[in-house]
Image (cartoon, rainbow, N blue to C red):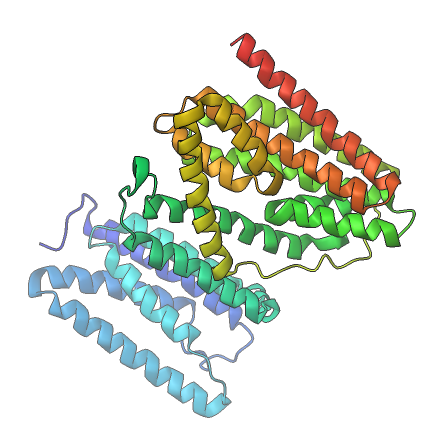
Length: 424
């Protein structure tokens, strides 16, 4: 039996007709300026195509599924004939309406087959895509070659490579789990990928704070280095540049919270208050600096890098595996103190790897309190390193603004975590 549903045939035909009219409304509006008879299909035709799909599925229940396939071929031939005739007359090449017609028939057929909600949802998405043609084409036009390749590489490591990796532990403490390690690589790469495009869309045209927020999603340390160097060349922009650096540093904290919580959701309540304190206080400092030069724009291209590099992902995966092994080794021989020292050392260079490592370990044998404190230490050290970069590489005026804007929130966050530890 094809049918497996509770709705009756009249309901099926009504839903299928509505699907066809919805898609036909968009197609008819898109080609509204064409003369009558020159359109391959309009509002009425699409409505009838959707209705034909539902009727074919109902008839196929009695005569066999071959009838549904035959009906689809017949509709395809009619649409192809109309498309070829219009192409000869107008010299325009475009098969969007023909493809939309075939899809309308299939969606109409899905309704009696027992998938009315799926068919309606797909019809809405289809209409949305059709109506946003200029916007989508504009996005494609602005997409650079390296960004297209980066998208394909991200899909390669996530959709193609990740599912085939073995999901089991190898080596000492079974720490080397290819699937889990690569999944964490995909997570960090995906966040940086989104940060790249957010920064490209926002850029400096929305002011220093927005530049820092977007840059913090991709690489807050890179933003700090770039703006610190600029302060030596552009005098009078210290407040605007400091606001950008502080916003980038503040964005790092919720990024750490998201990464840790995705790996182990139990870490979210453990980290929420101290991370939120550091992030909020740093954003406030960025806002205060920005108010001194409101609407100031940065006359600089922050030299956005390739949004995703496959070799870098492989290196990060290997680095993460080493961090995982060292974390287990230090826990085994030095206990909690070893974790804290290692977190502090790791935070100097990178906060993502130690966050991923401790989050994963907290899901197994490491206590949540130890993992949470280690992550807070790494994030705090990383923030302190940004302060040092701004002070050493940037102008003194910029450096002291950044030092105050980063170290005070770190102190507050550490105090909150200590208070929670003493009075849980």
